[in-house]
Image (cartoon, rainbow, N blue to C red; front, side, top):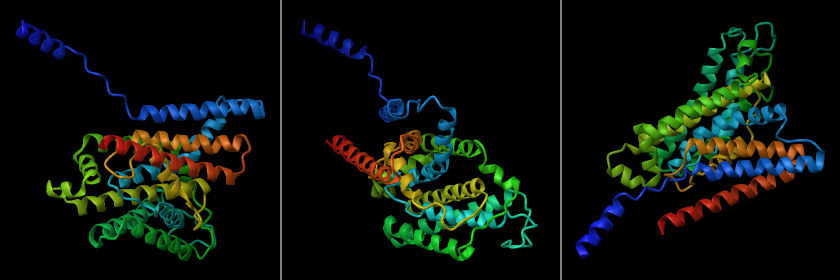
Length: 341
């Protein structure tokens, strides 16, 4: 009888349907929906008009956050490895002025390089991307081979890159850019660039050995080293990609403004970090997805546009943004403790 009962029990265990795992992005998506509905209600109450049912406003939200999103894709990779990149905003400025200097028209009397004007758009874009890539390689090399904490290494390059942008321009804007170059910053092109890059790195992180190595280093660097992963080389790749993406963001920023200025990209690195953390990537490393980062970027965009829509002062906006970042980090720490228990 006991044998029969054990057999029946085993069969019931065998045919018990598996519980579906809830995607981690679902909670973040619900937060986005909740914030959107909150501003929708406030819009009718304060302004007597809809916040969401306005195509122009929604387009502005997406366009404003496209550049931050491009940066955030690279920052996400860095944070998954338990690192940090504070240089992104300054890299945007350095890349913007380099790209703009090679995108000037020939009839501008104060061109930075008079012999290199009216170039096809691909050349200034590649120059801007190369500038970002070089700074990213410097970041990665400092972190990999000198054991400098990522916070300090990228803080140093943040200051140096901003100084380079000021020296390169002499404090003056680099203006009068060609229409071909300006096209990459027009209309929905920045959004297309952002979503394309997000899709590429989503696939890279989830389905390639490069992505598996990235998660492994963030989860346990020593274990990754023992398992045969070349941790130093991989970290250089990670920071190089982050710099490259910031270089793309810098070229897009210059194209949107039809000008390159040393003051561009201020605080962009913090917005990108905020989007990544809000999107569920753990500051402890080893956990995070590009899809969550995309939703985090949209949350920041909705918040910024919503506060402007209901005429909240910019100072209060920064306070609320800071509080949300802290709340996201606290939630991340809670999740980490719950996983370990």
